[in-house]
Length: 472
Image (cartoon, rainbow, N blue to C red):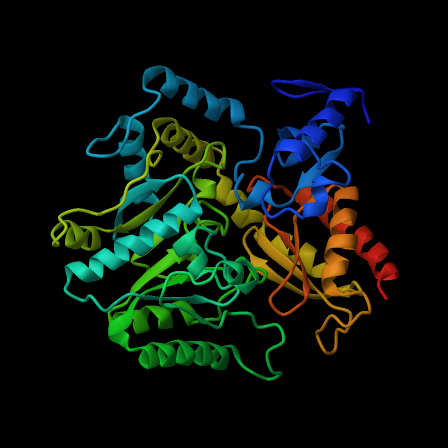
């Protein structure tokens, strides 16, 4: 530990580091943070970043293996460049609304995103984040069906254990019952279907059989609910919550066919998959999703400023604008903020210049293989994912693929695993999934190189060895 560490804009002494942690405990309400964090040891205070590393106020270095929160796609070394674009925009026009008006960065960014999006998706609405983007999509879809005289289409399908946000409609779409049950009743008509997790599926089941089962379940629910009542389906191309759930072959094509047959709008939630996470600008391209709407956030600005949005087809927006209301009935004060859009344009420029997507493609197989080498660890049951998004599912009984230790999964994750990861200097997601198994998720900055991968896996191997000796 050093007495003083230098960051690009601040110098933090050891005494001030302690004060900052106490100030956070006293005044800062932290997201999804245990109440004990406000009374125990102060939380880490991050003060500096470079490439794929972070330093806290005590001078400790961490590998950021989660890109902040699946979002700092270009890493931490382009803040000055993206910040300069923001500064220039703030000097020129610090704010104007997109209500009945446009401004240069919003118009240019909308056109750029339409260029990068899958064919046919060419109309862009801006928000400040992923939850807002999914809220915007729900309202657009409801209006779209009303404009076409289909007033009974008010129900939405999404998948079990999927995360789509925490605001009203987004939380209703969530398949994570541990997050939504405390706030029910939520939006009427939310229904949930099985996700694409294959670990623990019956031995001998083929990928084709699994795809058929998932599609049959989805269609059966639509028929049961009444196709004329179903408005939309929300799916992530690769599902994050539940642990990097890769779709089986033919799944997305089958979903598209079902939606076409029953007149249902298909939404690809690309808040995490979008902007390079899977080696393409959008995960929909990789998996041939062919959505009617894409929602995005996080990577569009590499989280340097809050920015998100929704991309849709002209035919959908035109139907709404030509409908009885004469407009899309939605508005956000900060949607399309000039400074945020300037940051988005600068971020995409960095990604193109630095060939960030190419870095993911070149290293994907290596990353996957290095993580796969951890299967020989006593606690590792499954390794899954694609691109720069992977998960380890931990078990104590590999044959039965279950966590069956005396130490409960929740106690293991929160009392043992999370502190061990911090001690090892690894920032990632550790949680208990919907089936009661501990998960470790990696979704690093897209500039992560092979040296970073090697160091992450080496640290994880040491950590898993130590934990295996402690679990009973």
